[in-house]
Structures are given as structure tokens and as C-alpha cells.
Length: 515
Image 1 (cartoon, one colour):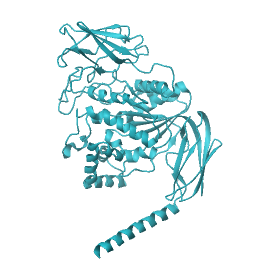
Image 2: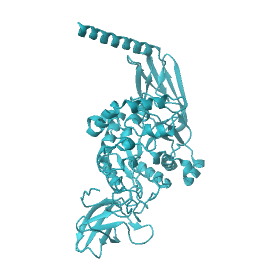
Image 3: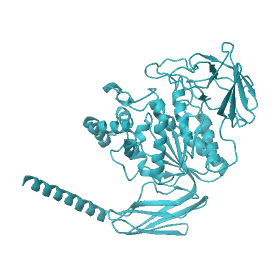
């Protein structure tokens, strides 16, 4: 009898909840998703999804540039239409959405739309880079949507922010937009959603638990951590706003940045996503460490596994956007002189130290995916500063990659990449692709090459350019087998191609040294 009564109570509770939900839906006004606003940039040459909420079973009409799409909201009041592709247009258009009420978005343009995301080096402000700040006066058709930095325990329907006819605040995002607009002469729209010191895990959808046991464990522990969740709720509900300490605490949690700052953007039509993140995942070489109360925020995947997780992350985002050709440009971590948790002080020019070289190697795994590339920054960075100011070249290189791989321009956009190596007596000959007019930036011999006969004892190599190849030898190594190039925390490098783009780091050995 008790079980029967309990079942009736549960059924009644569900019915009441459903009735309340339905009543709320009945009362809700027509409202497009918050990613739509005046001054927005729409992606050219692709179908344009427009979606939002309304009363259940309400007729919705969306009109743009003479094109009209019709739909009816579902039983929960959700609706979505798809408009036909448009060509790029600087001239302002008007989008009208009609239902029980009328909403008009003005000053709508059509061009190239990119999402720019990551952690502090993506958040790094244009105002901190004088040579980029000077370019602000020359901008013409760059617009931005700055996503408010916040978190949520559930996947949100709406993001906080609005489109503005001004460039993004991020130096990397602005540089990328500036150099892309400078050549294409069409509107560029940047959706900037980043937060300093956030890990890859912070931007991962909950469904990745099914693919990654370590992430499933992280989320299980997070769900059970009532103290952490209460602290976050208190910060979010504070009338005075949260403190810097609470800010750091929230942004270093798994999943909840994705819920609030990325999920609500999808499936807004865009060309792709620029990702500048990884620093938070460099503390450990491999695996997910067990941490204590003082070290709680470092429970993230290590450098060696990062690349495979990043590939899964990209595939999940493409599924979310329902776009297998959504492009991803990954910014390689630049030079930096600090090592891992167990060995922070390193020789940052050595190829055998536990440096960011391992993260860069991991990041390069995205090249195994279609519609993905790497902006090489191996010649940039600061040995002592994790937030280097040389952001302008990154924007230039990202724009080159976008032009070549998304706009199909016949240009050189990549630096020299390792192709193969030949063993010739007492020397190695490294062959490169993307290496026409191979040269050095200073006219001296190529630097950054190390060779070995046994994967353990590495020596600096004397290097000589021969066409699109580099010949290597060292006095103390008579039978070299392996080569490492720019495989160090902050290597000294000078090898470039005709476009003055730096050669990508690589290694030919398979040694998996633990530090």
C-alpha cells in the first residue's frame, strides 16, 4: 500500500510540474535566441538557422532580404527556421520575426563569422598590444559579440551579450579579424567567448563523458561536491557580484563554462572556431593527477593525452553545430621557459626537458582531422612571461590559414613541415614540404636542430640548407638516427619559407621519457 501511495505522489508531482511548465510556455512571449540582435553579422554562402522561444504551437515567420521562412513552435514553445544562403553584403539588412508579436533586427550585414575562444591569451586585450591598438583606427567592417563570462550547471538556451559594430576586445581575435577583413573587404563578425585559466575540460559538453572515462569521473565527483556547487551558487546570486577569488574558482571547474558560454551559441552559422588554449593543461606531462584541497584546480588531462581529447572535442562541437566542415584553427602554444609541476625549472632550449614542446606535439594531432589547422607560434613567446605581447603575428597567421583553407585562396599559409628524413653516412637530411625558397631570417645557419644516435644523448646539430631540405651532422655523433627540431620550451629558431612563416617543430624518435 505504501509503495502504491508513493507512486501516486510521484505521478502527481510530475503532472503538477508539467502543468506549471505548460503554463509558463503559454505565457512566454516571442523571443529569438539572444545570439541574434541588431548589428549582427550572418555567415555568407551557407544556410542560416534562426531559432528561439514562443508560445506552444505559435506560427512564426522570419523574413530577411526578401526571403521568408515559416514554422510552428513545438509543445514547449521552441522553434527554428533555416534561411537560404546569402552573398556577402556590407549594406544593412533588416530581419523581421513575426508571431503573436513582431521583432525587428536592424543593421544586419553578411560576411565571415568566427568564434574565438580559449583562456587568458585569447582574453588578452588589444589595449595591451600597442601595434594592434593602433590598427583600431583603420577598422571598417569588423563587428563583435562579447560573451559574458559566467557559468551554469545546465546547458543554457541563451548566452549573455549582444552584437556591436565594434571590434572584439581580444588582441588575437581582433588581429585575426583585421587581417582577414583587410584582404576580403567584407564584414567580419567575431563571437568572443574566453576566460583566463580555463581548462579544456571547462569547455567540454557533458556528453563527452561517454567517450572519456576520466571526464566521467571528474563530472561524477563534481556532481557529488555539494560544497563547491553551493559556493558557485552563492557567487552567482551575489548582488555585489563575485570576487576575484570566486571568479578564479568558477572558471576552473569542468563543463560549466561550456554550458553558459558556448552551448547557447550553437548552431549560429559560422565559418569556424579559433582555439587558443592549453596552458592550463601543461602542469602535468601525462594523465590526470590526484590533487588535494589546495591543488584542486589542476585535475585536468596532461600534455601527452591533450591532443586526442582535443580531437574528440572538435568532433563534438561539429556535432553540436551539425556541420562536419566547421573549421578549427588551433593556436600553438608559443615559447615559454617553465617546465611541469615536478620540474618547473628547466633548460628551456634543451630538447630533453619536460617543456611545452610536448603540448605542441599533442596540439599537432588535430592535423589528422579534416578542416583543421595549426597557427605556428614557435618563434614567438617569452621565456619568462606566460602572457607574451607578440599577438599581432598570430592574427596575421590565423588570417592566412583562413584565407587558404576556408576561402580557397592559392596562397602560402603554412610554414615548412617535416616530410621525411634520410640517413646518409654520418649525417641526416630532413626533407620539408611547404618549403619553397627555404631560408633563415638572419642569414645564418638554421638553428634549433638536435640529433641523436640512441634517443637519449642529444647534441646540437650543424645545419645547412640544401634546396627544400636541411642537412644535419654533429662532431660527436658518427651514426645519427633521430632528429628533434624546435622541441624545447623556448627554442632559438630562424628557419622559414618564402612567406617568412616558421618551420613547425617535430621529432622523429619515439622515446616516451617520464619526468
